[in-house]
Amino acid sequence: MPLETFKASEPLTLGVELELQLVNSYDYDLSSSANDLLELLRRKPFPGVVTPEMTQSMIEIATDVQTMHGPLLDQLRQIRDTLVAACDRLNIEIAGGGTHPFQRWFEQRIFSKPRFQELSGLYGYLAKQFTVFGQHVHVGCASPDEALFLLHALNRYVPHFIALSASSPFSQGVDTLFDSARLNSVFAFPLSGRAPFVLSWDEFANGYFTKMESTGVVKSMKDFYWDIRPKPEYGTIELRVCDTPLTVERAAALACYLQALCRHLLERNEPPPEEDDYLVYTYNRFQACRFGLDGMMVNPRTREQISIREDVLATLRKISHHADVLESQAALEEVERTAGSVGNHASYLRRCFAGSGSVQGVVRASVEALRQGPTP
Image (cartoon, rainbow, N blue to C red; front, side, top):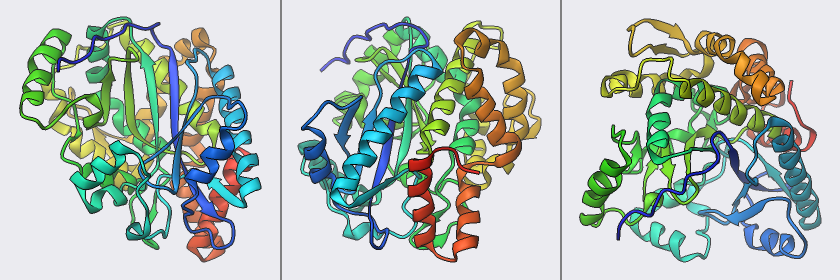
């Protein structure tokens, strides 16, 4: 079956998806409550879209198509407030964070939906280990070739988004020493990682995808778990490397950082992407997962090493005028605050563990952060 036609969309429009944890209020372990929560939410209008995810202890929310930081943040807050109120009625909690600190993957239950059951049969225990929580950001593209250009032009900035969003230092009850342990679960899937270096949609759709489909390995773009992938049905590219932040404020800021960065790249003042840009891609991605903002990244063109923190701050200075046009100054200020002073949410959760002495205390802090807004 041919790849569906790329439906061009308004350039630089945004859509945000967040996978969220459902948590027991008595012991802060994950709660298999997705069915009950979704049924309750169906009874009245929801300020966005809410859907099930792979296992019963997680849901995904999605915003409408947005263009500016203010309305995007407003809708995310409305969704957050609606979810919190519904969870209170069910006596459960809801939280961000890329991993649950102590859940046992083998206790998770696959959500009863044909695609999830099919994936469970295909991937075995990996499907339950996929009880991890990410933020996905869609950016509208005027044409399919523009989408592929942006997908590859963004490759050197992927460590920024991993490090800024990192919120999964704990897994299976221990500190993993990674700022983003979540991505290690994603990397286990055979169709994860980077997209092939193709800049022509005709070559991508009628060459690469047609060949892949003929092998029987894939049926649609959903079968690819790439760090960034095109979504032809929406006319977007989708950035998939971010952990779910602890707050919707951080989630909105990351989305608008991506929007401003894409506007900068579309001016085409940077060298065009090329295959050799990926020579250091896996190394840079590992550094961001392991060390967060303190990781080192190699510039694929100059071969110079720089800390991810410094590269983020330098990039913010370079794209600040785009934030003025897009009215997202507050978003970029939040990104600067994250990189320059307060750190990512992984560092915050480690401080919470040091203060409480327990992984339950870490989950409690995550629950409170989503309810109350910005963390220290």
